[in-house]
Image (tube, rainbow, N blue to C red; front, side):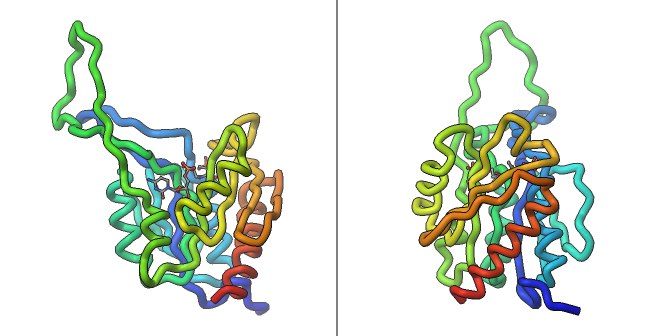
Amino acid sequence: DTPGSLQGRSVLVTAGPTREPIDAVRFIANRSSGRMGFAVAGAAAAAGATVTLIAGPSEQPTPPGVERIDVETATEMHAATLERAGDVELFIAAAAVADYRVAQPADHKVRKSDAPPTLSLVRNPDIVGDVAALPTAPFTVGFAAETHDVIDHARAKLTAKGLDMIAANRVGEGLGFEVSDNALDVLWAGGHQRLGPMAKDRLAAALIELIGAHCHAER
Ligand code: PMT
């Protein structure tokens, strides 16, 4: 066997959306299907890594050889990730995490009333930012889903969140959320590489190869 680019490495991946409850029956979510992040987890395992996948609600099958932990909210994803991130060599944040949650979700079903209701929101913790700030931070790769000024916004997130790399994902027009194909602009302090458009599983393998080359060089 030829060893993969991540042979023997420990990798943690987040994928899918989060669900932020409004009341006992309703939630706020987003269009992430989990496809991209599950493909990344599968590609890392195929490249020889030991992979843990922290997944928001998704219909995607667990990739072969991957340990999967299911979570629902951003708060749960944060806790599950931070519990493990200090012990891995590589962290890849492909999840579409809700930036806000409902301040006080009701534990019963809220009834219709005459006055339009108001939702009060509070910020969720920044999972990838908190991982990158750990004293024993792994090599940390973020994603950035953007509809416009993709590269500029992704570069700003790379710096603001203290990441080693970021995969900028232009979303809309048949790419990004839900669909089977995608394209990424991968950015790091010294460079830039465009991957795709292609099917998410092939794209994930190309991304893992690129990450593998960089984390070997830096660690
Ligand atoms: O799941 P699919 O349908 O296949 O779609 C794939 C995808 C478009 C969801 C994926 O490729 C992608 O771009 N994921 C990141 C989406 C996103 O929420 O980006 P963002 O720009 O809001 O967040 C930037 C980075 O911070 C991301 O790595 C995100 O995981 C992370 N983040 C964001 C908020 C938060 N509270 N904690 C985080 O860790």
